[in-house]
Length: 502
Image 1: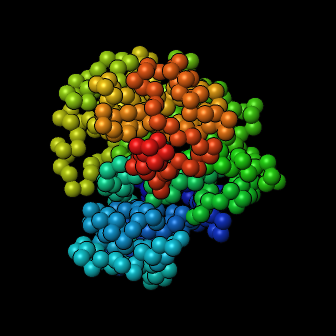
Image 2 (image 1 turned 120 degrees about the horizontal axis):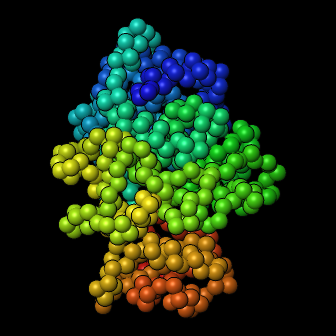
Image 3 (image 1 turned 45 degrees about the horizontal axis):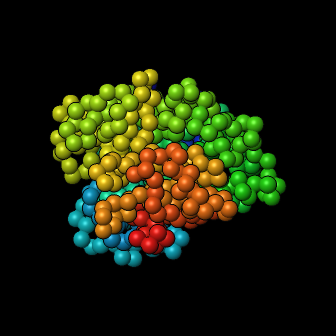
């Protein structure tokens, strides 16, 4: 198995030398070119002091240049720290400090954000800051030394520190090795329908595990082609999909829906195959709602750890589930309070362990991260049915009680989505003088009223789960989301408080 970045680059340079590896609107690079370019850049980085274990922050938009720089760093054994282009100066300082970043490679500006103007002087680990142009202009380094260092990297060596992008709580610096990250990607390739012939488009930023693992490393492990762009826009994205003959579109369902609205008037013909997000597929290639798995994962598992082939219907008893756990990871459900393992079909805390799970979290001892028997308590709620399919029930910190009874927002959302005219639903709690109450933001047809929804909800939900506050919108773009596309829990609650008079 090729379980280091260096081994993957060598393998695909030999097997797919002239095939495209990464494409953006302004540049493309083949596997042969990627191999030589990362080898040369790696040697130059070694000459200025970067080596095995050196922590290097990377802050730049999606593109070939991001991929080339990141792969060069990981190839020589440096620890890559991808950083969000949406960070404020205070957030950037905090992440540089948490990860003990020693070198920072960052663009000066992107989409109105200036990153280097207000960089703190109080970052004791930081030795140097370079722009990408300065990095590319570094003098050549010793090729033989770079080759030896790259070949000396082992699967157990640290590869990257990724910051979580959760909907609540401060981001955590999650440590991954070459072996666990590449193993996690490899375990889910078949379920995500990615092989060497795939031309994959992913709108997610490469600084997030969805873009880094689900995009760049998925393409690298499979020998596929990744098509990416810095600023997705409907017209330019559709043209890019057509021009580059994209066969697989993975990522955010709401972006696919937005692109589908523009597709009829765009004049482009797409070549997407089943396994892509279905809003962009012809109707005859779409599945019955709920029949396909919702891939499920997190930064700590380096992306999805549970799924089912994205182009294949699951058994009817598993509809609405996230599929089954991938090879290399074990999943169990426990009581959130006691940690006791629960039987099949019981809702509880999802815990995971295995060779594809993270090494640890920056600044936290192993015993503070994992249970005594090696499981990570994810903070997600779910249940496993008798056939081993995992059903998600939201976050443990999203769960709340109404008059002493437990409400799982995901359960209410699923019931609301089953109602006629409802396209999406987002549920949370609103505090009140008599305790928490259920509130919902619903994406639905303009003809639907809150009273009508309330009456219909009473037919599919217990009375204490029926929302007492409603906000109705016609466009899912009105739902507040964070930089990675996840619903922003704080802003959702603010929206509902304003709309429901909370």
